[in-house]
Image (tube, rainbow, N blue to C red):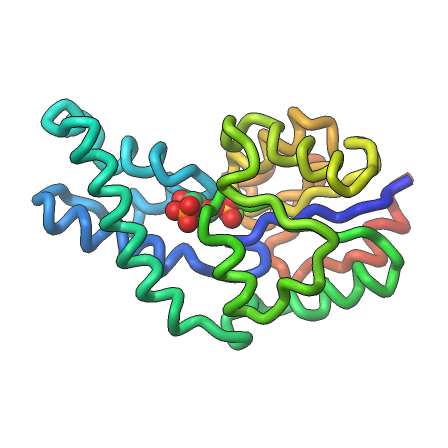
Length: 216
Ligand code: G16
Ligand code: MG
C-alpha cells in the first residue's frame, strides 16, 4: 500500500529553473564562457557543484578549488536575489490541487529536493507547513541519481521505500527513485523522464486519485 508521496520541488511544485538559468548565465558571461538555455537543461535536478562542473566543461582546469567555490557562491547570490521576488503565484499550475488531493487521501507528504535553497523557496511559496518532512541539499551527502535523499526521507516519514510514490521532473531524480525501489513517476517529456514507472506531461496533468486507484 502507498502511504506517502515524496515530491521533488523545482520542476514539480514550482518552476525555478528560469532563475537558476539566469544565475548561471550571468556567471558564465562574467567568466567568458558560453551558456545557452539548452545547456541549462542538463542541470535539471543536478547539485550546485555538479552544475558548475558541467557549465565549465574543460575550462575547469583553469580554476583553483577556491575559485570554484567562489563561483558557486556568486551564482547562488544571484539566484537568491531572484528568489526574493517569489510568491504563491510561482506555484506550478495544478500544484495546489495536488497537495490538497494528497492530504485528502490521508497520505504523508514530503519534499526531497537537491536544492540548498529549498526551505527558502517553500517559504516564498508559503507551503512549508503542508509537509510532514523536508529533505534538501543539506540532508544527504550523495546527490541524485543516488537513492539516498529518498531513502532518508522515507525513514523520516516512518514508511518503507515500496510504500512511497516519488514525483520527479529530472532524469537523475527518476533514476534515484528507481534505485530507492519506490514508485517513480516522471513529470515531463518522454525523452527526459520516460524511464520511470509512470509519466505525466506536467504537474497539471497528474490525476492522483485515478493514478493511485489503478496502482494494482
Ligand atoms: C534543484 C534544481 C537544480 C539545482 C539544484 C541545486 O533540484 O533542479 O537545477 O542545481 O536544485 O540547487 P541549489 O543551488 O539551490 O542548491 P530539485 O531536486 O529541487 O529539482
Ligand atoms: Mg526537479
